[in-house]
Amino acid sequence: MTDITALPRPPETSLLKALRQTTTFRAILVQPWTYLTGAVLLAVLAASLLESTGSVWGVTTALTFWGAWAWGLVGGDPHTWTYFKEVAPAFNNPQVGFFTDAGTLIDVGLVFGALLATLLASQFKIKNIKSSRQVAAAIIGGLLMGFGARLSFGCNIGAMFSGVPSMSLHGWVFMLFIFIGAFVGSKLLVSVFIGESTAVAVAPSPAAAPVAASAPGKPGGGIRRIQRTRVEKKENVTQFPIGLALLLGLGMIAYYYVDIQKAPRLAVFWVIGIALGFTLQRARFCFTAAMRDPCLTGGTNLTKAVMVALALATVLVSALQLGSYIRTGNLEAALKIGLISPVGVHTAVGAFLFGIGAVISGGCASGTLMRVGEGFVQQWIVLPFFCIGGLIGAAAWPLWRDLLMVDMKGAVYLPNILGGFVPALAVQLTGLFAIWLLADWWSKRSNA
Amino acid sequence: MTEKTLDCLGEACPVPLIRTQKALGELVVGDVLVVAIDHSCAMKNIPEWANKEGHNFEIEEVSEGQWEIVIEKSH
Image (tube, rainbow over all chains, first blue to last red; front, top):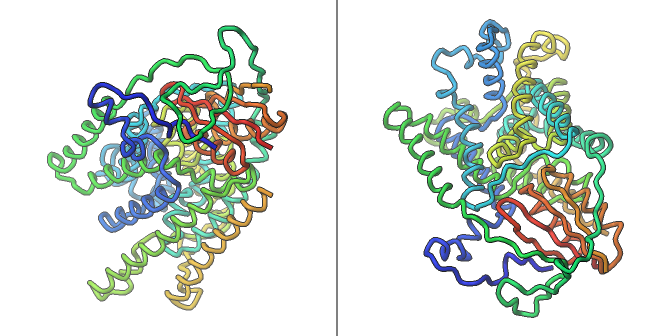
């Protein structure tokens, strides 16, 4: 079990090259972070966003706005839709546009944060698609996610990652049904969308003779290299300077919001969006994998990491509420910190559809944006269809509002049904820990 | 000893890992599978899986954003 990237490398000449070879540089900017690092940072970033702006982290409402703005450009009039009157009134706020919408700034920041992380690691590549099945998966998955997230009033971020720590029942219902949707999506992926591809035997040729290679440096410490055919590889081109230039550009945009627009709040959304994208990419933190892998590949590391993130976020949101209560003495206002959304059949149906879409398309909403920044052509296709799905969901609101009997006042705050704040907190943390234990047991069981 | 290559370039998670699991299942102990990937999550979850299953593996970055995961079937 040897990772050759950890082996000693030949000394380099220039200062920049030398810096790029240091262990610290590689640990921070090149090697993937652990899932736990990702979980802690995501919880802290989401809490910082809540504390500094009063807003929870959401992804999909902005994508619906993008769809609606595009619809407006081609002659539609989404401003008259009842959805934007009853559910997302921010859309009709004259001060909200592409460059001034909080959710849009987070989402665009997320794309650039992921791009930044990829460039600083010199790992940017445009990853082209291979088959038409991938195009179909991207289109269907994007539409399902966009539409599903409207039904459930948010995705695994807006509904789950922001709802559960706020002790809103809709977050828990979302989590249960996205697991079920991911299970169905996995079956669909394996039976319909994966296609055939088999391993090809390497033809032995004089040019590529098998060698027990010990090329980069001298592997010491008794590490045995796997014997395989090796071809001389060219030295990688560094993308690090491009990453630095991008960082400068992103910083200048933040400066523009603070100093020229005099809108420091918008700069906060922008900077935290970048940090979220950077963290998701560096830790390879994938909510979809957390829901999908237990049944599909037997892996539960991400499932456990998501539970840690939710537990930590719960504690942080509670701390912010307590802090606000101590400062102001107003309990009712303090408990409003966070996100409590209506819960009902629509939450379950939306989460289920979203789960299917996320698995077949290869990523949830935040995952799609992160991979758009990383250069995945498949996600470049997913994104516009995600927006179209959201647009359809918004347009069809009167239909499913009545069909699924959405009660806009039907939010359930767990402390109200579990006998108070402290019992609810205890039940919630126990529940998250129980899922963690179940995931841990499942991984060991499927390993045996 | 047989050496096989599996081309998973351009494919998104979890496809590369599923293909790897299937391809390695068809090999015998001592054989080597080289999986070509450019999905940044697969360069973490394929080695994790190989590690959990107890196979020897190496991660080789062949160019920017492209890796080869070399797995030696150990049992």
